[in-house]
Amino acid sequence: MNLINQVCAVTGGAKGIGLATAQALLARGARVALLDLENVTLDYPHALSIRCDVSRAADVQSAVNQITERLGPIDVWVNNAGLARHRWIPDYTEEEIDLMLAVNLKGTILGSQAALKAMIPHKRGHIINVISTASLRGIPSETVYCAAKWGVRGFTQGLAEEAAAHRIRVTAILPGGVDTAFWDDASQRQAPKQLFLKPEHIANGIVSCLEMDDFCVPRELILRSLDDSDFSVKPA
Image 1 (cartoon, one colour):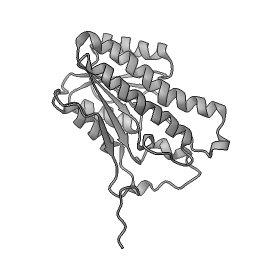
Image 2 (cartoon, rainbow, N blue to C red):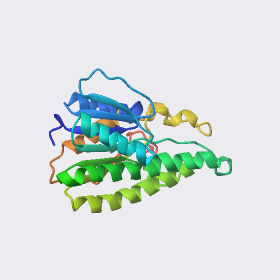
Image 3 (cartoon, rainbow, N blue to C red):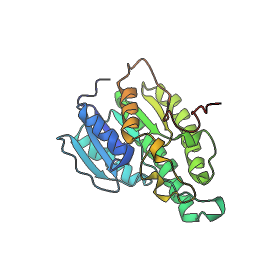
């Protein structure tokens, strides 16, 4: 896909991976809507900031309407919005559980649903779900986050099958540790941020998937730092 003038929506676009992705898309000539609870101003003529709570269907649909009206039909939708609360299981409050499931899981479902409805009439499009390697294994102090991301991964696999019938591609991006605000709440353990990827690494992975030939569908892309503990080889 040539990204010039492609209309792209990025949730969680005010910072971290979302902001880096929006900037990478804009640098390639795309027309980009950044959806977030925070406003962001970028020095690009085709950047649009929309306040959106991804856990509310009305907000998501309003964002779709604004994007279509101001930028054109949606070609790319990146479900990136997410958050975590790092706790031992007995310490989670009901409000924290609801919030993580609402943003990470429900938000991805609502975003994908709205994007699919917008793309089906045109028989084209690409939905990117930024998940996490937390969808591959259980992690202490991230149990509820893992539960949400495992749900997103299962949903994404089903979404890919349904979307393919309409010539719409779906890709799951599974980042390992990334140096973002995700870790601000991690008091249970020290995050080795010096070993983590930067948001730009994930943004470049997303753009690479979007630019691949339409005949090829990258279903899942795992992005990890070489020094990430799961992949590092300790000398004997």
